[in-house]
Length: 487
Ligand SMILES: [Zn+2]
Image 1 (cartoon, rainbow, N blue to C red):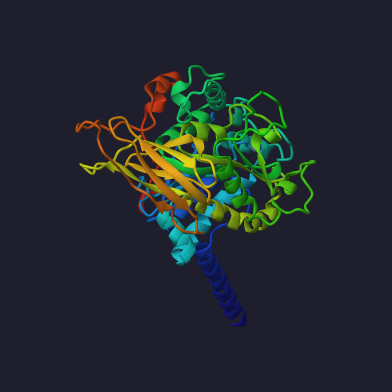
Image 2 (cartoon, helix red, strand yellow):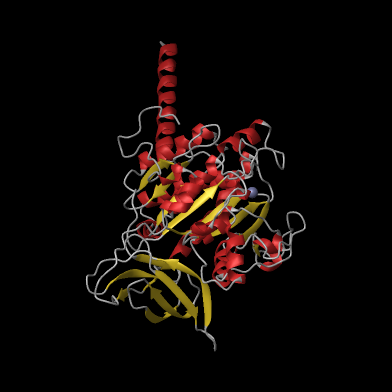
């Protein structure tokens, strides 16, 4: 009798513990650990199930060399499409397979954004309501597997993809084109893929897939998460002279890029600290935790400069810590240390100005118009020789630091339109809206429905697969996930 009652008690207490475990599991299933490639997918799937109205999981058209899909989770109030006047942002991590902190940070960030949105955190709600955010935890799942299988301690093993190619040297070298254009005083300073006539190396599948993503979604701001040092690195990564290091390669947007880099480093507890030790012998702490890429060391074929020179996107390379493969027990602390910086950086997609370019008479949006800016804050007017273009809905986004600017919009068949604007960038608010109605020159209108980015020459050069449509959605929606979904 006594025994039976004890059994009953033991059973119900076990049931109770199990029930608690289930409840905790449902409300906060995220575990700080190194998630393998299947678990990475499972985290994204679980977030998608939990936050079905504001997320979408998709895979790029091509996977890794070994066939592992490259997954992205998107946060938006209208997942799956670009909305006029809503800036697009992306984080890509683990491009070097043995640099794994960014991968785990992005998984946690996805979980965090979802949970905070659900519990009504006003700051996160506002961010998701005003920004379309894409998170790609791993660009190199094959390298991650190799690094992990070999213990994760080597400085190089697992860095490259499975064809032994460093993906951050595999992008088309558009720096060389823009430097030649500068030298020849050519005005062509943006969307330079159409000027590319040869590739130094064949593109890897991971590179091709990401190029397609960059061409298809009109990103405004992004960062590429690495490890091995602690610094926010900004363009250009390639020196003008060919010098290996110590040559500052400023872009026309140097002021904006320095601001963006500081927006990350200054929100990190150590990155900008004057007192910290460098990882090797670096001087980054004295520079506020930021560096120009080529000043540090010059590289060709990086993803950061490719984004800036092939599209409207501004990208940084964030080095998140001295250790490339930190032990799992460090991950939670690293998340706490990077959380505010990661979110503050996404907010930077709202600095400067944005607006719609449209036909003054028909009110139709005009895509592919050129937005040229001169900084007139000081005594003399300084042209920023990097134009951006309006996208599908005639909308444009021009990241700028505080100051006064003369903004001119050009489009064939229309009279150029200039406005003087003062940018102040109050924190955590949307960009100042400045629209541009354009008057046609001869009363007839050109058709502006051409895709703002595609250039047939380039597509033939890379291969036909570049032409294929939006990144493939694997499964979406509340009922899209089958039990035990595999990658
Ligand atoms: Zn790296």
